[in-house]
Each structure stands twice: as structure tokens, then as C-alpha cells.
Image: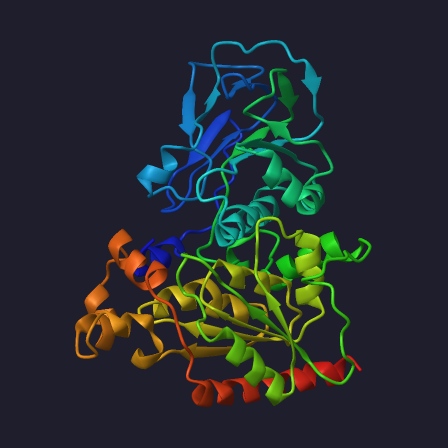
Length: 412
């Protein structure tokens, strides 16, 4: 999504309530998502992903929707299963009865990337439930691409959203009836919740509290990487690690760790892996006072930091707008102490390939223009690593330490 598209997405309003005489309604006025509803009893045939009005009246109406909040991205949307809502012909008899509405969405698309799992899935799910449904109203989640690893990874959150078992559109064969059905998820933009667009006003602070309720009631999770004793006198800093060919690797990570320890932090190096239990990651972040990391999906773990904690985002060349859109604004909304460290040309590995006077180095914004193309993304996100200037970055670590001490003292 381009910088312009973000602003466009933020202009959308709360979906209109359905006229009482409309059995099927769709709101397609938003740049990032569609919402379609059956406003009354419905039966689902999961083998065809079709919802039928149980008491159809008037001429048949058919609406189709791909329930994923990346509406303008044709390539991604082509892989999202289409859901059909129809008032004719009459649907099949009901085999499983639910005394609750269905909420239909896809866990496909960019799922597999930790940032997108929250940005395109879990946060929009939270927004949608708090926009379309009444307080504490039960819903049944009807999901396509609900792969076993995803369901297992987010089991605690899914149970917090709904106490009912998931209806899996990809392998369920029984027909299900619901009191009504809504297909699609509402997004307000990158990592944001706009309280003015939610009927039951919520913000990222409320979402963070929701995460806390989901994970804090469980017994502590033992994990060598994440479960470490917290010093009572030294604040803890989580240093996010990136390795391999993914780009934005911190090349002098060991030296940065030593510098942070010299300043006064206890430092835990954390590499977000698909196998890392989310409960363990939550416990680490929730009990820490600061996080440092190069812009990337791993910084999504900042959602687990307590308000008042420090987030230091290292911003590589050419990533200024996306760093602010994904994490800068979110950090402020979550009441974190946010510090942004924009690297200089000499700290980028791109300097080894391009001369300092070339546009790609000296003026990334001018070089990129308004286009965030695949080539630009590869250049600045996948082909760039960073080696921090320890003297300059040390000043940020000292500021982070001073802010962290305040948080540590407040919990003493």
C-alpha cells in the first residue's frame, strides 16, 4: 500500500446499519475492505461457501465477497476464497444450530508474516466485533485458511474473541445455521484503531488490554530465550534480532548489546521465530521496560509492551514513511515512549553498492517518489542491512535508559 492509500483508507466511516427491509446488504465504499451481511436467519453450506437466507422474500439477491482487508491488491485478493450470500434459491436443511451470528473472514493473504497477522487479521477482527456487534454479543467465527499452525498460535486470542468452536470453511461439510451473518473485516489503516469510527469506542490501548486479558491469566511459560529473571534494579531491554537473507540485519548486534549493557540495561536478545510460543513472547515483552529493533515484522511485539515502556525503532534508508505508518503512530497510540533512530548513509550496507552522491542514498524520498513498488521494497527492505554508529546510537540508549528507569521505579 502506498503512502497516499493510507490516508485514503483512514477517511472511511462506520458502516451504515442495514435498512430493516433489506435481507442482504453490502457496504463497498471503503478503499481497503468490503462488508456484506445477511440481516436475519441464515444457513451456511461450507462446501460451497454459500450463506442462504432462511426465509427469502422478493426477487433473488446474490452478493459475493472476498473477506480480507486488502481490497485493492488484486494478486493477494485472487487467493482469498469467495463467499456468497444469496436469498434464492432456498438453502439446504440445517444440521448444526447456532444461537449467535456468524462473522466470516479469511486468514489467508499475507498471513505468515507476524505484522500482517495482526494488521490484516487480529486488529481488524477486534475492530469489527466492536463496530458491528453489541457489547458482549456472542459471535461464531467462520474462517477460511484457518490452518492448524495459525489456530494453534492464536488459540488464546481466538477463544477471547469467541467461546464457540471455529467453523472452518475449508474442511467442514455440515450445514450451519446462524441468527445472522457478516462477511469481511474492517480496517482503519496500518496498526491503528480510530475510536471515532467504532460504535463501541476503542483504541489500541483497549486492544492491548484485550491481549493482556488473553495471556496474563495463564501460568508462566518456560522458555530459555524468553523466560529470564527480572532484575529489581536494572531495567530490561529486549534487542530484536534479525538473521539470514531477510534484510535489515543489525550487523554489529553484539556491540550494540554491549553498549546497552554499559548504559545500564539487562539485555535479552530475542529473535522472533514461527516456533516461539506467543505466550512466552508476551511474558517477555510485558515484563520488560524497553525494546530496540530495526524496522520489521518483529517490532509488532511492541503490542505486548506495557504503556510507559520505551520503543526504539531503527529506521533504515528509504523506510521512513513505512516505519512511521507501521510502528511510530502505533507506539504513540499505545502510550509508549517512542524514539526513532534514522540511520545515516554510512550506517547502511547500500553504501557498499552505491555512491554516497547517488539519489538512492542521498535522497531516498525523491528516488522513491510516491511509488512503493516491489522493486523499491526489495531495495530498501530486503537488500539493506545496518551497522549502527555506536557513539551516535549510544545517546539514544542513554535516553531510553532514563525513561526506562522511571517505569522501573513506578513499579517498585
